[in-house]
Length: 101
Image (cartoon, rainbow, N blue to C red; front, top):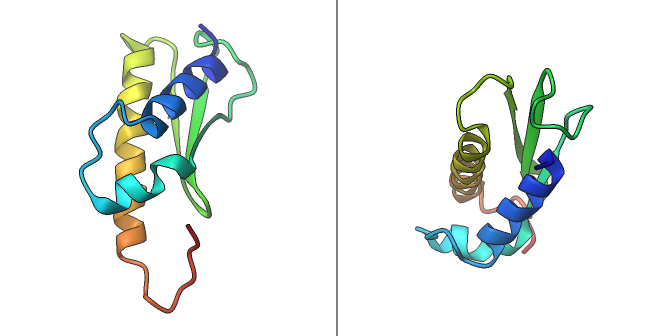
């Protein structure tokens, strides 16, 4: 499986509600999540794999080495955790800051 295919699959799973969304913020912004391969190579066995999780202007980038056991599952769990972390950041934004939905 290619990294970009894995990213697209996880992104669609979050958007479609496959994962339990715990807060109103997560439910509100699930449709805006973007999961992208930021690696130079699209191979899960490349020297390094980098995945960006983004909701508008807030994002997180996680990087991996190929010898992690069950790497696709680790990436999937990290993407979900990163999305939840970004939603917590959104909850802490000042009310005067414009963050459109």
